[in-house]
Length: 375
Image 1 (cartoon, rainbow, N blue to C red):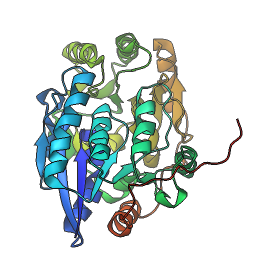
Image 2 (cartoon, rainbow, N blue to C red):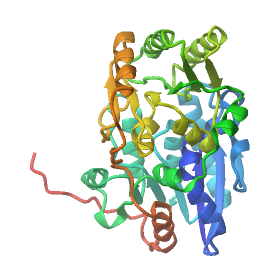
Image 3 (spheres, rainbow, N blue to C red):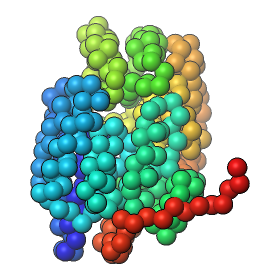
């Protein structure tokens, strides 16, 4: 039985991996070691570990509300001890969070093979870009969401036989998870939806340094939409989130048409997308998952710049008038024929089969795949 340690640090990565985690738990050839850390353990971000259905092996508090450098250092220290105790055969991580960067470093320094999901992607407007590529270089198996991203991972020097284009787990969840009825969703969040509704998620812009100013422009635009129901979810723990929390709380106090939910969880989040007219903000979910609902995404600013986009993505600058222009546009177009480039069949099953059967002997000794480019 192969011991596979899966580390989750946010509502987002758990939601994406949740079905794969359930499949691993039920598989007789896998011993699942689920370790929870980061925002999951913070009341400020909704204590989302309580939403996790699978058995949790360990909770590792890295004091996510402190400065990112502090949390990163704690992640390296504490996870080194965790890996020494659990001795997993394989570590699985997803994405580009700085705390997961620390987890991957601890795994690498303890000679644990690492499987990385969602490598090869580009987000030039956020520090996540450098973190994601760094995790790729520390990893030994790679599961990308598009063929272009697979090629980029190989371009980074990874061996092609270790890189698999499997599509997005989050997109597959849309097809597999039963959604709530409108009434169930309204009761669950204690908020009555209107004829028009928007779902808003805005995270700090780590390379631009003006997150609060951008978010004020968004709130100023939303202030003009008194006839629209607005559901706002919490920003992540990146530097600059404190001001965003204050702005959200002040906005919902003075707008009866707005509701703030720290964490919707996967089922409520997907259901909220289903009943919303559009998703607004700068989250990767708006780029990767939302197009499968045939709904528009209003993508604000440069945070997601570089990611492959479906035709349903409406890009706009972080300025009130341009945001209102984008919102108006989402009601004027038909998105019923949108094709999601992140969608493939059997994503979770394909990942599971590979992590169960790929030979791990000697996998730590990586060779740099030199493409022979002349400089």
